[in-house]
Structures are given as structure tokens and as C-alpha cells.
Amino acid sequence: MDIEDTLLMMPGPVPVASRALRAMSKPMINHRGADFSAMYDDCCEILAEVFQTQNDIFVLSGSGTAAMEAAIGCTVSSDDVVVTLENGKFGERFKDIAARYGKANPLEIEWGHSFDLAEVEKKLEEGAKAITLVHNETSVGIQNPAEQIGKLAKKHDALFILDGVTTLGGSLVETDKWGVDIAVVGSQKCLAAPPGLSMLSVSKRAFEAMDDKGNLPYYLDLKAYKKSGDKSQTPYTPAVPLFFGLQEALHIVKEEGMPSRINRHATGAAAIRAAADELGLELFPQLHDDNSSYSNTVTAMKAPEDVSGNDIKKDMMARGITIAGGQSHLSGKIFRIGSMGNFQPKDLLLTIQELEIVLKNRGVISEIGKGVEAANNVLDRLF
Ligand code: PLP
Image (cartoon, rainbow, N blue to C red):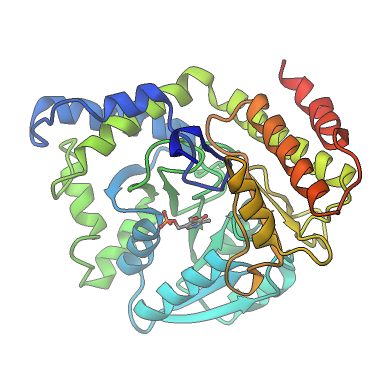
């Protein structure tokens, strides 16, 4: 099937609006000139609203992982302990990055389960320079309790590093209120910009930790980003076409307004969950208390008995809809539908309708239509 006819319903990259795609074909500009600086300031201003922060914001030419590495690489020295919270693939990534730069003290729980805050606190009591949390663990579809972890980080004087890669721009993130020292987002997720850029907010306390550290990474040196950012520039040549796309995508975010955008994301994910329930599909996350919740941007479902999640993904792909399977040991066991970015109710309804057809063809359900009806009952709130 032609890629032009394929609907991306995976947890990033997501479809990019035509006006953002068109913006990327503009002629190149001088990245040390006034036009670039105006674009840089415009992006940072909208991002400050998305992040809900007064802290400095930087845009890196590199995907979300670059920003995760910048956050740890600039603040953590070889003797520093980092408590890393892992209940999925991206928590594991933070642990691996922390182990490269310092000493990781991981709290590893079964992927898809919610954290016990008492266990988190016990880890912090052992002493930590920083704690990392993945706000929305995309690999398993769970939203972790960022605000509560922020309080624990503050109590134990640890820097709070938050991966908001699949929440910022789609779910509520209150960077300053929650005491987040470094929050990170990728361009290709809820903000619906093209992949290849990442953005992060950095607190005064995080900069102080950089002053203490001495040697910082070179390309990902956030102090260099600060020095250039004060002149509305980046330290090295930025990916200018991606900036054009990002600026347009951020204007779309601003036009919709964050409260509406957050509501649309929450409603979209609730609609997928309602359909899953109606179709007898079990959600993958195991929530043990009220602190965690199902993700507002990606829904992870267990593959039905005797059917691989990868086959569901393959069948959906053949019908023109790209969804995601499971990562690492969850490959085949789960499948995931992303509902992030600029999706509209019709995109979700089409996805659920096609899913029903795939499930019927595989003998999982006997009739088509109940999932769409359940989802539509929820999506109705958006009209
Ligand atoms: N963190 C989370 C929660 C993610 O979902 C992803 C990507 O899916 C990443 C980090 C890594 O981002 P990237 O692939 O842009 O480097």
C-alpha cells in the first residue's frame, strides 16, 4: 500500500499536518540571522506554555533519546547515584544512560505494573543525586505518577529528571509545580511535528549541578545551549527544515489550546479503552493504586489467545493502518494503538473498525460494530 494511503496510529511518529510539511520545503535561512532567531523565540514561547514552566527551554537537533542523554550527561558525574524507575522500555533506557555517566540504582518492576511510592522513597533514602521517571511509559501504556515522585525527589534533595516524551503536548505536565528539574519531549509525538528534534526545560538547580560537574558532553552540552539560547540561537547548526516544521506544528497546538488538546487526548484514549472492553481485549497495564493511570496517548492491549500481537499489527498494516506491536520481551504478546498528535475522532473510529474486521477474520470476535459503537459513545463528548 502506498504510504500516502496509510494512517499512522502508532505512538510516534504521528501524521504531520500538511501546513507543517509544506513549511519544511521553504528555502534555507541563515541560522545566525534574525529570521532564525525569531523562529527560535516563537517556538520556545509556545513550548513554555506546553511545559508550564519559567525555566529555560532548548531545542536539540536529535531525537528524544538525545535529550534524555543531555539531561543525565550534563548533571551526573561518575560517582553520582541516579535512582532510575523502570516499568518499561524507556525506564530501562534511562537506567542504561545513567549507568554510562554515573551509578544507576534502579528500581525495576515488572513492565506494565505501577510503582509503589514507598519503594521509590526507600531507594531515595539510600542517597541519590537524581531520580529519573518516564511519565508515560509508551512501551506498556501506563502513566506514572510524576507529581508524587516530584515531591519525593524534593524531600530527598534529588534532581528530578522527567521523560515527558509522550505526554508533553498531549497530557497535563506541570513542570514547575511538580518540581521537574529537566523535562524532555520529542518532536514526533503529541506535538505532531516531524521526527528529529527534542526539546527540554532546565531548572536553575540543574544548571548548578552542571557547574559542579566540570566536564560536560560536547555536542549535548546544555551550558552551551544556554549561552547560545540567550542569543536566540543554537550552539551548532540546527536542523533548519525541522525547525520550520516544528514552528508550524506548535502554532497548531497554540490554536487548539492546551486544555482542549489535553481533553481530546484523554477522550481519544478513553474511547479506545471502551472499544477494547467491548471487544473482550484486556488492557496490558496492571494498576495497583490510584497514583498511576492508563495512558492518555497510547493504549496497550494483550494479544488475544492464540493470536500474536505481531499478526494483528501485520493485518492492520495490510489494511492501511499502522499500529505498534510490543517491544523487547513483549513482542507478540501485546499490541498498541497510539492516539497522539492531531488525530480526529474519525481516525480512531476507522482504526477500531479495521481492528474489528481483523479480529473477526482471525476468529476472535463474531460480529463487527460493537467496538465502534462503544468508542463513538465516548468520542461524542468532543462534538
Ligand atoms: N521516551 C519515551 C517515553 C518514548 O516513547 C520514546 C520513543 O518512543 C523515547 C523516549 C525515545 O525517543 P526517540 O525515539 O525520539 O529517541
